[in-house]
Length: 214
Image 1 (cartoon, rainbow, N blue to C red):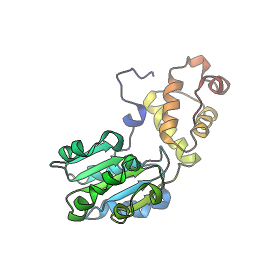
Image 2 (cartoon, rainbow, N blue to C red):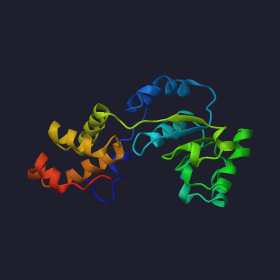
Image 3 (spheres, rainbow, N blue to C red):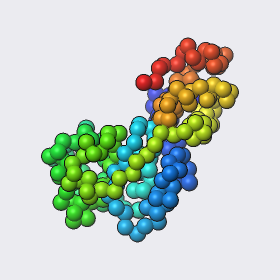
């Protein structure tokens, strides 16, 4: 099945709706379950490589609280705009926290101290170097890892089902290996493969036709 230009990206279309559907991060399982069960949600920083589930986990947490929340990306969220958008919200999901300057990060110190906002931030950069010590001291840090081979295969199977795409296991594992533990990249590759002529979806043809993942 080909995705039309108007359809949402596959990664968004099959994003997990519950913690049970969340793939990966076995080393954090107990901690993740505790966060979902706790009465008070602490401010968190999810640190890890692209496509490992940082934003998905933040969304699942926010949605589980049944309170107003907003999701923003740091490069697009200036402080003036941010103050307005936070009105009436209790949770802020902020992607790419490392893109905020020290002055912008300082904005969060009083609102976190007062409990006005719960911050669920994500970063691909080491927070010891990209986040101020003052802000870091107010956040619980979760370090996420790239997905392993079997977790990537699970993600691929979900993507194939959503696309109604038939690929043999050898081809699927090849695509998973190309994505290097990045589930989003893997799903992008599957979308690309879905637009290739069915007769050319062999492993050899995929090797030639698919874009390189960097």
